[in-house]
Image 1 (cartoon, one colour):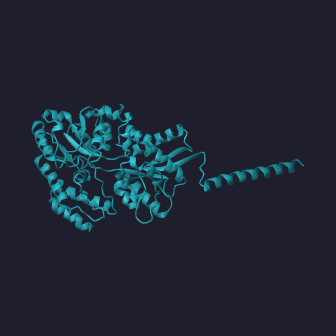
Image 2 (image 1 turned 60 degrees about the vertical axis):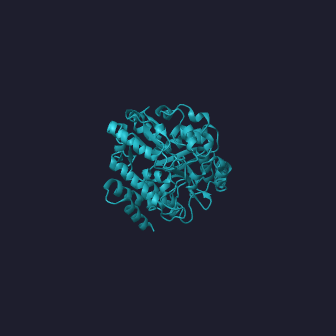
Image 3 (image 1 turned 90 degrees about the horizontal axis):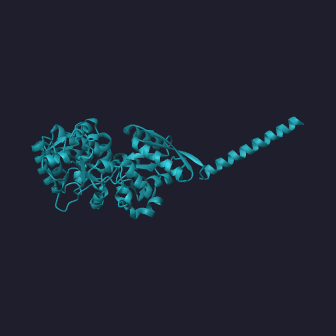
Length: 431
């Protein structure tokens, strides 16, 4: 009798356990979320992983449901993008969330897009966004990524070197003024006014975007050899040949050689987007309280003083186990006012929600306000926010950027081709 009772109890336990498991599985299949989920995340930037880890803690502390854990992997840039492409094309192995750099993004819009749209979250706040930055990650009216920043281009001036040459930032209005000021700096200090990237595209791209030009037209056809681009590259070459500019040590503004060069007051200024502020605070400590941020010089008296450059979007893949949770979390971390303020405070990025730029929190002391000489960095940004042209993120952009880098090296470093020859050769190869 005792054995029979024990057997019946075992059957009842087994039945209840099976029903509980079945109910739990049914909830997941029906789209309901469990109390806690783990979201996998791939990135090529350690600081992005650190940011999302902090925002996960904030999400959980504020009582949002479900509770979240993040399982992040920081991979080399090329490896991560290639691995993601294979995973999305094969239909297996992709993470819930992933960072995609803007120059690689067109690769993921080909064919049936394997990323989930954010329109249901973007549309209600669309009038609060610098929407041109979201357009970079859109196709057929669907927004597939959330950016970290506007990427407004600015000039970072070393005030000590300018003072030594008797140059005031306020006196530099146009690029001709900048060139003339550079001659004074070179004469007084022996230092170049600036550096140009010769293995990356940012210096050249910013200068042509300021003038409403681009690497491609909006319809995807190459525009590299247009007169504006040729004239601009010739201007850069003239600055190098005069000694006012030099090729960036290491080839680009993210190399270890370059950080050391600038930290040792190697040049009086550098043109990069606002997201570059973190490179100063992290890699150029000796320039603390020596750098002032200002708008770019204009090409004409009423020309634009900035350009929107670079960027990385964060995306939810179609393979996500918890797509709704992943989208809600990313909207919290990157689309809400709270998230946009955090992106400035934690990362030093100019956030893409302009309605936070004049909030008191944006001028509170942090490592960026302590490092730079500006009294109010965002006051300057508000002044130039309408002077940013969108860039054309087209299908051939990844190949075009690779070819442009080669052309810049040939013209500015090797000087083996003229600007017109190099840009015409690239345009022909792309057509």
